[in-house]
Image (cartoon, rainbow, N blue to C red; front, side, top):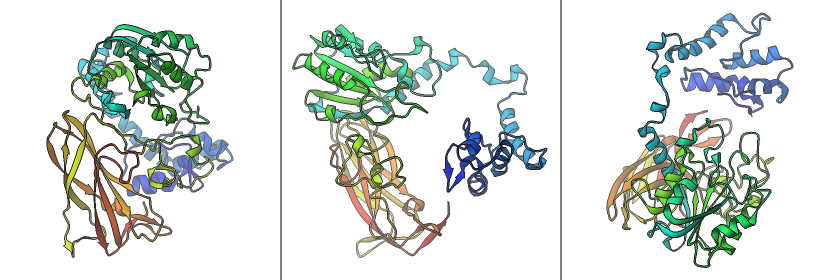
Length: 500
């Protein structure tokens, strides 16, 4: 799909180097390219790259876009080009069986009995559980071990909200959807609840909903978040603060609940949210980043919270650098990478939750890092352009069987150009029995060691590279409890890998 953006001054849908030279000739792509909604129109009306509709369509089709095909009569598109662009479209339609008799097309027999089969519902649950990131867990509050509790409260605008699906999702049948309230309410004998807000914007806040719900609770689940009411395509946020009165709702859940009540915050979001206050509050026992876990949300949350069955130990990691506040974000009009992502974040501005961060109900210990490459005077030596193969072991030192996400990073020591602080080059999620050790192997591709040289392209340069292996970034201030192994290898020679 060609998008709304431009690259080097050329709109994506009219960029022949992108759609033909790189995509088809370099990468061997044989499918078809479709524009993103109004991306072709943007070539003229927003990028001002062309002056009329015919020239716009001709530029896009000639560049390699397969759709939007007028302009033949004016000689700006050849019949041969049209034929070539049509071939992958018709081939795909034939593969989908659009021209076959209905009885021969297996897609026509798909209905809810297949789409919502037990196997697919189980997969929805597994996917949700595998996506939860445990951000905070004071004094090992989770998993809860005494459920059902006498009295629990479930509060916040997300407790019974279809916003658990996020943007661009189909309309779901409610009988297949388990909301946070549905799943968490089975953990208590007496259940009180209150949304506090009419929607996730939370511009109108009814604090009595929260105060009365949490008054006698032993456990308080606070479900906050964004959803498409706050974040979606075409609906950007001006800051990363919790919307409206949601932070006040969280504070009230603490202020009006018994002082020994455990407060568990569950946040539903895609983009980062400022959770600094919640992270540093001693009253908030645990924080779960649930993102948008869809139809099995409630069941998945319940199983994670009480460690019930397979995949019920949190193991996912933050997929981006989670900033502390809006002030930490560089201006949008600044297109440099300085201060962005874990690769270029400044040491004096640590993230609230680093990229690759996530807690578990157990702890891991890494040992015996070895690289399968020759050594000289105790230093691993690698020829430029070769891959690095390595291995190590990791021990689950706790009492709970769990998955671990192994992460391998590299750091350039003496490159001739500016390089990232560190770079993720490999990861793998593996199950490890309690008190058991596993051995694992990894590969660092040559392309991962390459740097970009202006006017030349990607190249692997001679020099020293540090390697780090563990369950988190090296030098991470917010530690997950495990260690990080390190080694280094010396690259000899020089290898040009190409422009793309």
